[in-house]
Image (tube, rainbow over all chains, first blue to last red; front, top):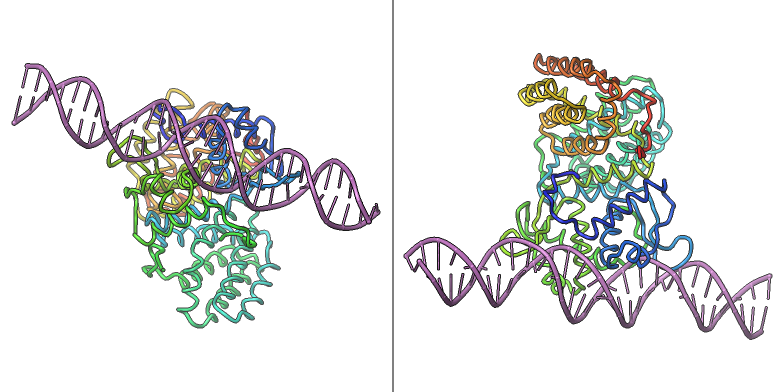
Length: 237
Length: 237
DNA sequence: CCCGTTGTATGGTCTGACCATATTTGGTCT
DNA sequence: AGACCAAATATGGTCAGACCATACAACGGG
């Protein structure tokens, strides 16, 4: 669909994929519903079980199904909805292939965070989560612990927007650059400036100052990820 | 990595996946480089060929490899870099699962386009492509043709930002809601207002008016996708 | 009523075979 | 020597069947 297929014969697993998607739409299936077993699907669709498995692997990659062995209500291919892991893998791999630069990832983060924080400033949502993360960062004993709660802080901003898509993208970007974030904290040594940024962001959201919040986010990211910094290809190890 | 694995034994194809990723990073492989054949990989990694195939299917889904049968330099699993199709599939499927709403998708589009158009206004990039798309939309004889060039127009804006990640996300979102875009054009009947919006956007970019361009984009999307409109779950039939 | 054993359905994996395709190779004719 | 055609070969695509590991279900004994 995406590209002009040129008339090449579709592979069996692609056919399976299409049929499963049809079924999801036609039956209005949602997260929690079960798909038939692999053997049953293979028989229904007149393909080998391996083709069914490849299709399910694709769906699993896209965060649409989750497979469980054994027996019972939770066994088999269950429809889920975790777009996050797919996005994380996507960003991480393409960073590794040098098809994306760290700069592009950070810029995208800036875009999402500025958008989200402006919305949060208007709605006042997420202030409690931000507060909790701030306290935890103050108490953090290691860069790793600090980053963990830093992620929670920024995620709280994004999730306050109520948009699951931007929140999922944000989470994926954050996970993909996790190592780089820890390095940045180590490099800075002192987290006082970062926390000052955080509190400035929090205050702007609390006061409903959308423009101020967006500016604070920009300053914060510029401090943590200065332009022209190493780590462009993600091959730190 | 993404979730706490809890200590469950990794599946064979996951191991293959990890080893291939290691290899990409260690050898600095990039798009165009070839991976060993399926049989050879299976032997090297001490797994069955089916496990290798499942891993390759995942990588193919993520737009990292592209498989070609036959023989010669282009045959086998070749590293590529097409994050786009994965994102398109992701959005389309999660829309179908009602895990994302059309509103969230359109809002994300607005975010990316406002960001991109502001950048474009500062750099002046993409004006020629926008112009070409405008002319083509004037000459379009059907809603479908109009939408085709409308996509080109908006893509030109996003690609002018020079950020491949936001451009890829934008393209994916646009493809995922393609049907809805055609419906919107049909519903509006006349494309004059849309073209007027487009020309206003173009003029703002030309004049370096970032704020005006962003406002024009917001007005344009509000016209094409009014808040509270149908199509929320993507199950148009 | 509780608990352990057995049965069974499910995914996970491997092996081996065969097909489809496209390049490579090598021979043959001009 | 060059052009052309046929066979060999390497590669992914697919299938069938077997077996393992797991986890619930059903059953039976205490």
